[in-house]
Image (cartoon, rainbow, N blue to C red; front, side, top):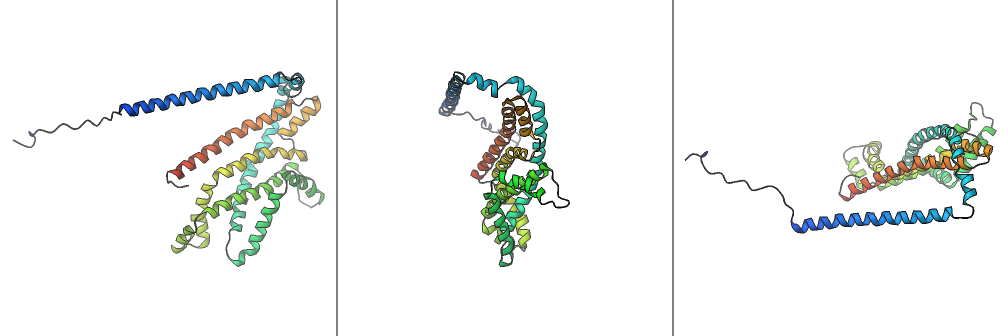
Length: 295
């Protein structure tokens, strides 16, 4: 009898069949999820109905609707508000890029070690403390109206440029603190290991510390960008025709505040996707950290 003729035992069945207890447990979880969704939906509908009833049945609702929620004035103001919104988006793109680069630079300067760098650290700290404490609206007023008053040759008087400069000054201070928190969250052993491998201080910062620090502070950085997107509307203080100022022009001409509501809703529509993206990034990073992955 050859090897080929020998009887080969049947391979065990590799198909997995869950037990009845597990099937019952999964069925119970699905039913509980459906029940929770139904309860949440009903609760939300009831709450919305109560709020709508309170607002609509209020004595001044008719006048409020005509003043703030008039569809005719919304259609009239929409093209002008959208034209002004293009300025807000450009400010967000340019100022956001400047703020990220300048904030990272300030944060690195604040974390330099050694007594020789004390003046640099002191200046960076003073800058952060000053502009974090100054209200943004005052910074914009000083830049838009104060800088042209100096009558310096070659300095622009454009309120868009000066307003964007004020935004960069203020938000760079906030972003610098976010980056500094990320840099200081890296364990000192990472620096020691890099230096033991022969890396210089600059190489350790660039190749070891900063990559970890930036990944850790992505969610708060995105939150700052969301705030920056909203605050670009403050450049209208200096006369720049953005979405807010365009709404103001239409509202003051027609004595109706619907354009303001329209501009606010457009800003909300832009902000919500950015906020949800921030939440998704934060949840993803928290999940990776909980699983022991790189953060």
